[in-house]
Amino acid sequence: MSGGFDPERLEAWLRGQGLHGGGAMRLERIGGGQSNPTFFVDFDAAPGRSLVLRKQPPGELLPSAHAIDREYRILRALATTDVPVPTARAFCEDRTVIGTPFYLMDRLEGRVLPDYALPQMPRTERRAYLLAMAELMARLHAVDWAALGLADYGRPGNFYQRQIARWTRQWQASSQGSPQADNADIQRLIAWLPDNIPPGDETCIAHGDLRLGNLMFHPTEPRVVALLDWELSTLGHPLADVAYACMAWHMQPHEFHGLRGLDLAALGLPDQAEMLAHYRRCSGREEPVTAFHLAFAMFRFAVILEGIAARAREGNAAGEDAHEVGALAASFARQAAALI
Image (cartoon, rainbow, N blue to C red):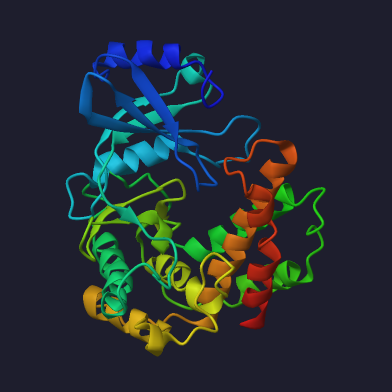
């Protein structure tokens, strides 16, 4: 068994799909993720034909969570756009193969740099990496989702109203039996957010988890070659992605690689204002990111983290550090509440 499933069943399925590269197949679990378990798939007879497999985690899942079919669909749709994504090869919903639905995509060469401080990069190059994230968001939000056949990928309009209700339900489901169940900051946000949604509405493809750690950069250049992990994507408001990407400027380095408290100028890093200004230039949008947008982003992430903690309590977490990651839910809730 490997990764909780029988690799021989996977090999047989790959042969049937014409995706087996020949020779012995090797599986390597990719660490660091907290959502859908992910593996490299390599073949001895085809060293240049490397695939990536993403599957649902085992066990009982929250409603609409870990929608692996949506990841596959959005990757296929975006393949014809200028948003860089891996090529998706095949989807399998037959649970008898490896126990859960899964899909395969091409493996790309590049670098994933989750730490917003970019300590491994020369000081003079760091700004370009973070601003590349703003440029990528602008490209994604300009995609004509209707033309790609994604009109049913989400519900246009009233995005924040529906999302606040959804993540409130997720919190109630995830936090049962948790020390965080009665978190006062979360309760304050649940009461405040619905009454403070800014006027105006717009619909685009929203990635839903757009942070530095989900970008793959070129091996040597500050250029994004792939936007990864589309599990939470939907049709939504563009500023939901933008505010989410800006959470790092409000959190400390030990809180998901945040930037708060660092000397940004000395480190060659842009501040949040520069990041947002660059997004506005690239996108042509003028609507400001407000305390509401940032508070919602952090509230939502707190709920996601509590979901990770819930899976850890049940023994179904994808990452080995799920207990520690889940404990950060209170930190994000506290910073969100401080904004309001």
